[in-house]
Length: 259
Image (cartoon, rainbow, N blue to C red):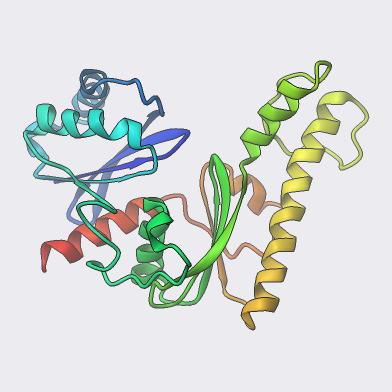
């Protein structure tokens, strides 16, 4: 089986594939101080519930945008599976997997965005805009062949909500939700409206500008935990694919394995 890891700034997502079949997905909060033993205890518990043993894992591939977490993730794979994991960017490069990066400094592109480009090439095969509602909200333009054309990075929804609470003494800490109406009649609803509809307008406006600049209207794919919530009010989003990065990691592994 293949064990894949998508380490983002907010969550670490683990998944297990048996061939093309996804056997399970597990998430924990990203913490650069988390030890290899803590990862091992977390995964062992979930494997046991899924009736899977650690020795079922034959390969590991990792996408990480948190360098400080990489040592523990590598040590966890060595201790738990007796395997050396392959990291996107260092062990597996964009050049190796046939992804052209058309930005000024290709080395600055995050591993997750490279993986998403592969997922577009392998699973959608059309010019696409990927909207990732993560710690940062990224909007990337990717060609049908996986070429990374460029993109936009904005503060994430939860990050903006936390900043609003931290900077304004009278504003409470609240969760992101779609309020019943745009015009809030209490503080919580007013904050929810500002963040939710504000981000909906930001995404919609940026996609319109991208299409005008690009000269066509690419297929729009949303991913990330908040993607389903925003899909409700953003008809510009064609599809929500919460497993976009995981599928990209599987595709990269399958390609590299045959090289």
